[in-house]
Image 1 (cartoon, rainbow, N blue to C red):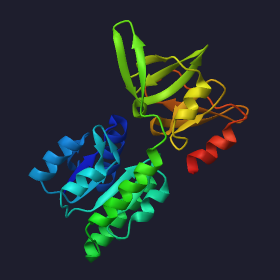
Image 2 (cartoon, one colour):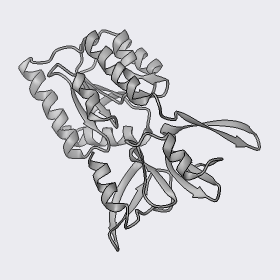
Image 3 (cartoon, helix red, strand yellow):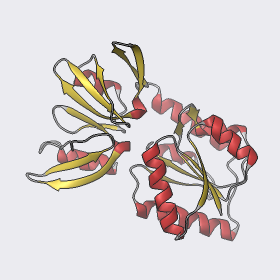
Image 4 (cartoon, rainbow, N blue to C red):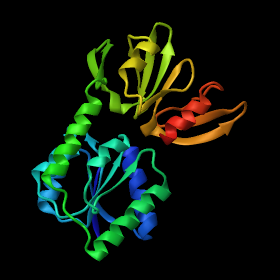
Length: 254
């Protein structure tokens, strides 16, 4: 068995690989691509039993790749995008798991793949489906911030929103932590930043901190109905406030 993983986030890739190896109880043969460019090369040179794919890659959306190459392998999408995107699926050969997915969610998707493929019920992803998915995605992301301009002593740098794990208020400014643990100063206050972010991916857990759902590694119960979060790239564990914990739990399950 050979599998292609299309995932631009390193923690998410490692999570998928661990789940794969645990499910099949062997070290699964696989290729990994973080971009449309690398994914194209791998798909043209190899054949795969199935594909695990995020939607947003480093240089574009995976739908563009699937629109370009005629695939025979079934695709399981692993994404943080809302479920309405997947109403466009009209074939039994495709499954999806929504981030932050659990091991149980992942196993169910693989079991579905096995059952459908063994029975011969799999249908290829056709152009109409891809067009509908791309249209839904474009509508969802139209109004949300893609990157921040960061002014540093060495010049101006760009910080992609999908690389931010935590944003903390610091006076009239904010500090954003990225996936590598680097901290960047954003010349805006927390309220202003929150309005620019996709509410399905970012949540204000207390008066001074916003977290990204894609980078929550662990959640622990804490005193006074609070939750301690382990977040990629952060040494300290941010904590929900008593007032936000209930809404935060609902947000995680939405």
